Structure formats: C-alpha cells, structure tokens
Length: 225
Image (cartoon, rainbow, N blue to C red; front, top):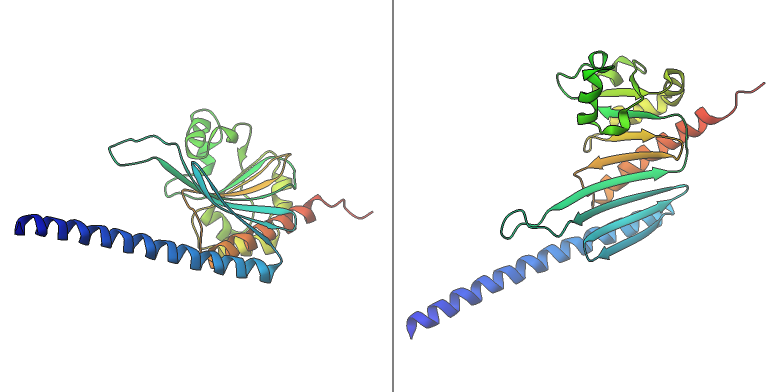
C-alpha cells in the first residue's frame, strides 16, 4: 500500500512540475506578446498573432512592409517524440528592382572564387538556386565586405542601393545572420532558423528593413534632369 502511495505521489509531483512549466512558458509568452503590442502601438504598426494547426507566430504590419516570425511543423516524427519544426523570420516590402543577394560572410568563402562553373554550384548550396544568374560583386565599404558577401545582376544597381545609411545599419546588426533578397517583386530579409519573439529583436529587424526600403526607394528615383 505504501508503495502504491509512493508511486501516486511521484506521478502527481511530475504532473505538477509539468503543469508549472507550461504555466511559466505561457506566462512568458503572454508577457512578450504584450511587449510587442506596446511596441506596435508606439510605432503605429499593426500586430497580428496567428495560430494554425501546424504553424504559429505573429505578423507586424508597418507602412509598406510586413514582418512575420513563425514556427511551422511538418507534422512528421524523425524520432519517437520529436517533431520537425522549421523556424523563420521574414521582413518583406514590395519595392522591386534588379536581382541581388546580400548574405553574411562565412569563414573561408571567397566570393571571387565562386563566380562560375563549380563555384556557382557551391553558391547554390550556400544560398539556394536563386543565386543562378548573379555574380559576386565587390561593392560598399571594406568593413561591409568583411562581414557580407554580395551578388547582383547589376553592379551599378547594387552600389546605388548600398547608401551609407544602409551600410551603417548592416554593420550595426547583431542578430541572426540575415539574407537580403531583391527581385522584380520586392525586397526581403530572411532570418532562417530564427523565430524572433522579443520586442527589441523585432524592432531591430524592422529598423533594418526600413533602412533597406529607404535605400531602395532612393535608388529607384529617377535622376534629376
């Protein structure tokens, strides 16, 4: 009888610990969401939390841009008790232009050696098939080139985009490694593997996105006659 009571006590204690952990996690999530809502109110943005059967996160809608931080489950177990979940945070704006990519430099990767042939295949592994048709470009400051690799259809277009304000914003970035894309449809900053939830981190990404959008709009303006 005492042994049965001991087992019951252990099960109850474990259940209580699990319930407490879930309560603390939910409490922290609610606090973070309130902080993000306060940020949105201050900035004049619109917050849209979402929860779907296999995806959850939030969207922030600002003037001309959208930021989505999400986790998405494929619903597949790779091992008992483990579920495949992909996390990503993306900032987007519909300011199109010639195709380009700006990605964080990786140690040992020389952009000059990745311009074609086998190098193009290596670039596809690093960035994805979207790099096809682009070439490595030396643009911006030496400090920028130390931290980022640049690919573009047009060197001149990339140089116009890399205004001093945008370079300063990129150099000041301290979050997860960003991949910046531009094509005819618009601009995007992707933080693969990161689901940002802190108000300060979301604010920093939105600020980087707004610096990128301002530089793109300036570069797209017709030259004065």
